[in-house]
Image 1: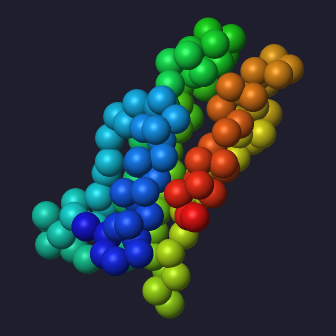
Image 2 (image 1 turned 90 degrees about the vertical axis):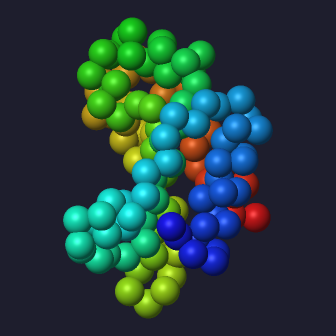
Length: 119
């Protein structure tokens, strides 16, 4: 499990996401998985969440966008102890799948969610 600030960030992000009406589908603890097979790695957790109202129109327009939906945020610790929240930029998702103009706005709030969790 992510410790101290990392754990609080994942917990806060989950609270913010739920508070905005998103469904949290999974929380994956990569470090715990590594330990189960006798390996060690830095703390990393992925929060997977979405909202069918926002994501469905994207997948109807371009089914392959389902490879990047639901949204995901990786919270991880670097070797110096810094904590990071990383995610795929929604503009990149729009360009990657050639989404029709304006549809990427359905998922463009991701940076705001992460920023709210960091406050």
